[in-house]
Image 1 (cartoon, rainbow, N blue to C red):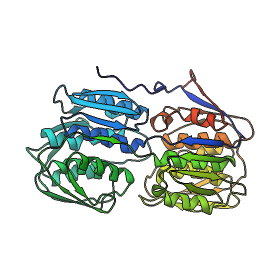
Image 2 (image 1 turned 90 degrees about the vertical axis):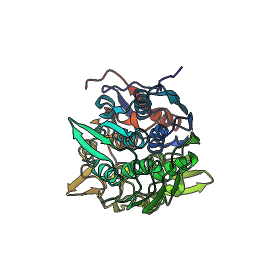
Image 3 (image 1 turned 120 degrees about the vertical axis):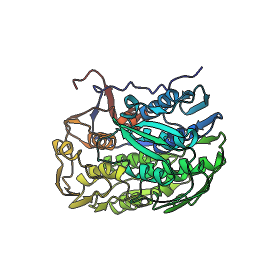
Image 4 (image 1 turned 45 degrees about the vertical axis):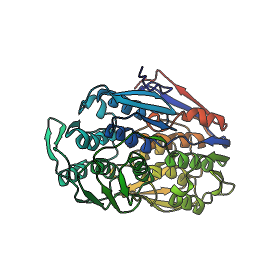
Length: 434
């Protein structure tokens, strides 16, 4: 019998994290599977009727939401992270409803597979973290180029095509989910497709790897141009998900900010080169050791300017966490955000903890204050949540209460357990006022 995913915590807007800081982290921590790789690969199971097996899947709310969406679309899903089995269809349904899609932007990734395989899809416009507009126009433009008829009706995307046909698709800007949606759609299209100005993220490469396991013919993933030769049908797969580079980076910052020494297991170092170079410039020692990395800091944090950029640049998903480290530095650091227009919502909350940060346009100027203090703060999105937890770990005075950690549960598996194992004084608190 299909079983629902069972993440450790219920999705509650009144959960919080209580942290008593001032303790250097010490020990080892293992990085979980990459959420942003697992989600598109789960959606790719819609391209085949066969049974698909996924390993190293993190137990997160977004995984739970995607599993439930697949069930609504007629798939039998047995979700017991780290293993997930997606069985044959119980019905050929093609509508992704608002109630689920509003919780998570990645739900739009069912659009390409449904359209390519069944010739029709009705998918609600997506929701998710409120860090920017992130429109789906590039998805729709690309699908239209492949021959789809697209219309919008009462908040839903309606897409139809007897069979998609190969074409040249040029993205106006790199888009991760847009690249992934078009790769999946083109895999079952008639003829050759060239996707130009693609996102180059490791999660895109991971999806291409899985599509090829299914019998697709995808080449060039990880570069700006991806070639896809369409096939008539795709088969099942068995695949273990890569490690989460953003979770790894988050624990690296936590170790550095607290002045600790942490061995981080299963680190995809090759996916974090731009980030690690900035850590080292800030005075943090990062020593790769096989599939692990040892992170430590003994001296003063140095101010480092950062500009976020699509991969392989400095990841926007590490901007908030790195900002906490810059709060401890000597001097002033400029952090420029070029990916999302509304990703400084954590700044006022860090200000409540004693940070000195001034936002001007797309840049934040962080004047190092040496130390932070505990406060009652509110998380606004997934990575902001992680930054506030790190700030709480650093704060040597007072207690920090991070509210709305349902954001955190979307992207970090058992974070407080992992931090406690490193010596942090952190606990989850339920029953808080929203």
